[in-house]
Length: 61
Image (cartoon, rainbow, N blue to C red; front, side, top):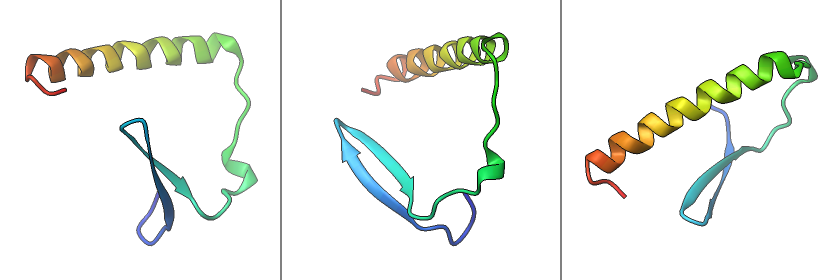
């Protein structure tokens, strides 16, 4: 995302979804095997769990 980009904004099930109106260039996509993606997904879950706990501790629902 950069200044000036235009997005479609949708709200679904209390979630805000931003979708770019322009198609991204092909060169930004890469292929990655499960050795890499498994670790990344595991780290993302840990971060998400910590953020969820913090929000709960702050009484944010």
